[in-house]
Amino acid sequence: MGAFLGLLLGVGLLLVIGGGRAKQEQTAPRRPSVVARWCQRRTEALRQAGIELVSPTQFVVLQILTAVAALLIVLLISGALSVAVAFAAFGFRAPSAIVKRLSSNRVGELREAWPEVVDNLGSAVRAGLSLPEALSSLGTRGPEPLRPAFLRFAADYRATGRFAECLDRLKGSLADPVGDRVCESLRMAREVGGTDLGRLLRTLSAFLREDARTRAELETRQGWTINAARLAVAAPWLVLLLLATQTTTLEAYDTSAGVVVLVGGGLACFGAYRLMLYLGRLPTEKRVLR
Image (cartoon, rainbow, N blue to C red; front, side, top):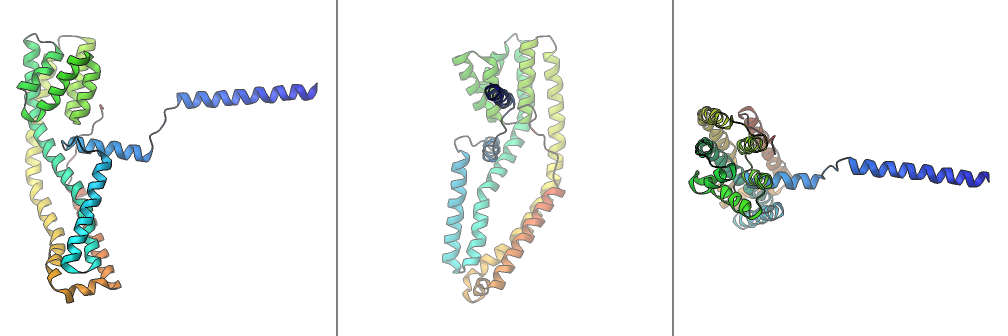
């Protein structure tokens, strides 16, 4: 009898512990893996650059192909494997640099376009249009860089009629912090109601214009320093590439001492360039209203 009661007690404790763990696993949010977080950051970077048809995996494949192409080209020109590997590293990094450049240009274009978007929304609201109609009209009357996103919003809203879900997809396609603020303001105005939407849009438009003007002045002054630093970093490697025609000179880089010189020079250039970007960086607005 005592053994039977002990068995029942053990089974009961096992069920209680198992049920508690299962409940904890159901209530606790599952943290995304490192690969999932990397894919999310890469996807957002590609969207910010205006590249929507390329997945993170395809982008990595493109980087590998660029590195292999740079390796083969420099190896055929110079015949020095160590120099070719160094330029293969630059080839692997080149697509990321292009994406960052495109993203920076697109952010600048959107920064200039958002005040006009807000003004058009304010005019449409004052004319009596509903918020979905006002957003849909931006696909034809809005600034050129933002028209595709608002055309997709109009198509989604006609197909589903769900304003909140279409607004979330619009935020994802824009991938812009200002767009997040505008979308959340419109969501709140639609759900809560009120008569302060026009005043809010006018205030936001004035703030965006002042911010764009100030940032444009700072970026113009910063551009000279950044371009000079990029030229200083690229100059030694351009000289090394010009030496590729002299086989006797490049043979020295295939030795152990030559590899050490290349690695040391690459690390020094990379560290100096990153330090320059860190010291000369401007504060960037993050997407806190995803």
